[in-house]
Length: 121
Image (cartoon, rainbow, N blue to C red; front, side, top):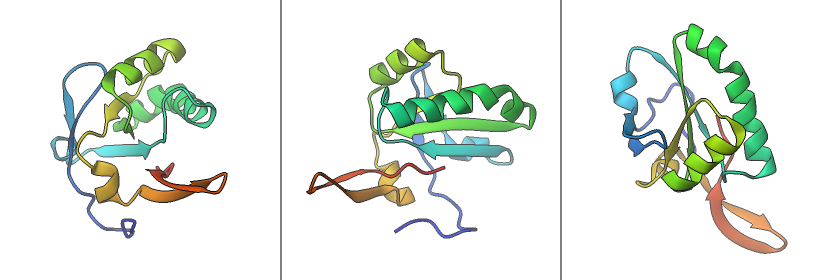
C-alpha cells in the first residue's frame, strides 16, 4: 500500500544523526523532500545520497528541507555522513514510518523473500 497522490503523508518524529529529532509537521508550510533508502554505505544508496548532497544548496535556496530515511541506526548514519561528506538530514526509522508511508515492502533476492525498504522519493 503506497500513499496516493495528493494524500497528506503520515506525520513522524525521528532521530537524526546530527543530534535531536526531525518532525514532519513542524515543517508544515515549507517544502520537504523525503527520500527512503534501503541501507547506508551501499552502492545505490551512496550514489543517491551523494546526488542529493550535490543539489543540497540549490534545494535549500528553493526553501526545501531534505530528509533521508532508512532503518539504519543513528551511529550508522553518522559514519555514512562522515565517510562521504553528506549534507542532508539522515533520519533513523525507529517508529515504522516506512510502513505508514507504504515503502516497507516484500522484496525478493536470490529466491529469498524478505521485507525491505523500497527506494522512494
